[in-house]
Image (cartoon, rainbow, N blue to C red; front, side):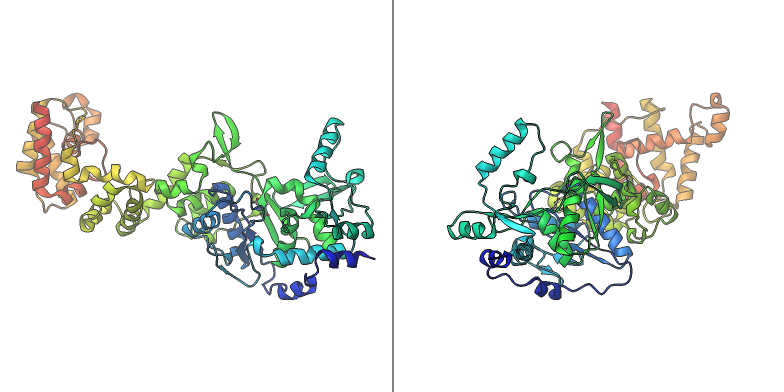
Length: 553
Ligand code: GLU
């Protein structure tokens, strides 16, 4: 009896690997095209680190006219959560990061190199496991979990390297006859790889991100097919990335130490090895200590946080590229209007120690992104967000014509306002422009330099009586405020005032502040001219009256 008999007994129906090699041929792509993937396990809400990996994979595949695919690694069915796949697929879609190939919903996929869900690739893994058994490179192991646990304890007590290798590899040298007999007797088994490695020898690996790293060779006879017939990650990775013709494996650096094993698997199966790029986790500065961004501690670590807060996906992507490649910032400065796809992303320029994530900076990026929206765009996006997360804002935005005027303030010009970082900020940002909301609130009216009640009343009354005309253009409007200042004995010109401040009780800016505070109950607002244009005389008057009432209380 030989290996072939053993292989046939274990996997009688498996196809020869030739079948799959032909079914999934080398891809016909231009020289240098990168085929890469994002290969998450559907084990919970998506982490921003996953989005980061996918974004990087997309950036390098796009710039080389390659392929980016989404593979679902669901072979650990105990850890799988309900809707796990939908979470991944819809998060990517929401960020405009749908794959060229792979899973596109819980049940559907696109592309010729599938299935892209590991749990339905059982036959393929078994074919390759059979192939290894036929060559004596894999074998059945009959150890029970209890036996393995006992072994682990012994190794621990004796302080020796844990694992199934060398003398500890109990079934490595079992004869084919004995193995066949045990299987025929109905004994339970799993399939292990027969590692040709030697711990004493070193392998050199050149990682695209981490650079040159040396490791001892792998000598562990790892499990390749588990008791449930599904593969382990290690084996599935080698088979899938080979058959899907992946050129670059871009993944989290928790897998760096598995590289010796993975290279060995590729070699033993006769596959061409892909290139590896191991990404360091995204870090956060926590009171001076750098630590990993964690879903448990940091809300911003969850991808759903961004849609809940209303931070536009393009701002998140822009920021992530920014921390991934330090050259991005200069590129963006030089090319403010280009799509991020045009950035020449370099894997080898990524940080080895982990990029630092700073929410304040992300929000700054977001402010710029939102400042570029037209009134119509920010209206649509805010409204869509409000429909999901804020019924009050939703109600306010129902009058689209008015909302467009509100959003149109200081927008669409060369220096658009940058005061909105996320849609969650919109309500607070615009609420004072809605009369029903404004008059329902109590305001404190914090005037600045000019505090005298009678003076304030005089400014407001004179302004409306003499100096406000609905049809004024902006320049005339401002001229009028200057004239009012002058009539009341204030400096018309701020510069002149600054040179001789003792000559006047204040300047035109102080008059403006009174008008602004009485009009909006805020000291900082965007352009007051535009606000007055939206309001018209009657509404301005009502607001001034309210301010006066409060003064007189
Ligand atoms: N399923 C693995 C993970 O989520 C993927 C690693 C890889 O990209 O190969 O960590």
